[in-house]
Length: 394
Image (cartoon, rainbow, N blue to C red; front, top):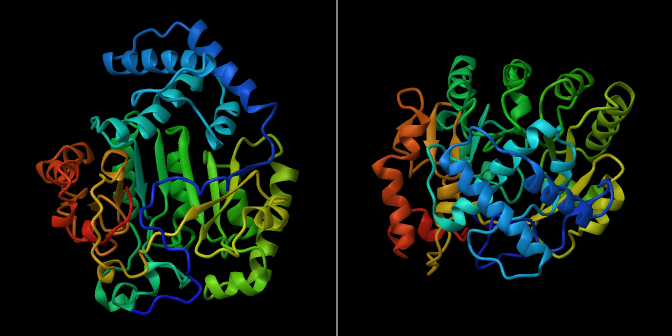
């Protein structure tokens, strides 16, 4: 499949993080340093009772990390402090949620670096649907062998399966993201899913292209427990937006964001939801500053991520990367039909050998197959796995 001529920035290696210097935060109260001081004081002054041995060790590392931060000491692999958008998230938390948040972000960021496998993945990404109404030039939805409905990859998650997943995860993890291969707002029972999630997770996120963001849906999202709402937008102007987001309408997008913002300001002025525009840097013309000028009036954060060549994963050239993929210690993807997959680069589930309809998420995460994949990566043998041998994520 021929790659779009719009895609000119193809990194040789890609980390799961924002593109360097692309994050724009518009409403952080005070300075970043002030937030860091607040975290340090919380860790020093709080008494953490009835914590597991694992959590006590994390808290010890966090306290040490913050002392090193303010003493300008070198960090070790087990050290971690909040940064970027995490500072805004922390600032919006109630005091009784701060400990949970710090433990969650430590596991999310540091466990992959230390190759620590807990009982559960720090983050579980659930796709309500694999169907999408867009055919973005950098996305696997443009792969007809995947997106053609008769090929069996398309479908909507059954609401009872969704509830089964949430019931197992509640109290075990904090990060649940509703998104992956499809557009979540296409699922007619998304509002029911959002209600079922209320009060259960601190790191609840929804990704959407905003094409179906009606007034009714805006109210349902804003009255839910979502912490972060991400609008997937890759350009500041109409011409480039509609070239990249095939089937998208710039006018409709703008109208929907205006409507959402108006409803939020009028009816949910005390809402702690964080809104973000996130785009993929597929070429040099995509600029965070331009995005901030256009979309910053609707959202609190704007960011870019580097392009990952998943528009045609299985035909990408084989590379010689030896670094381990951090997702194997950070995240599990669960498709609409219950398949559990290590990543969404493998959008046809070649690496999947488990289904949450039949197995517990905890058992899948700690299964022999998952450990085999991890060990292949640790032993610098990811080239023996497909599509890992064609992937640039580390």
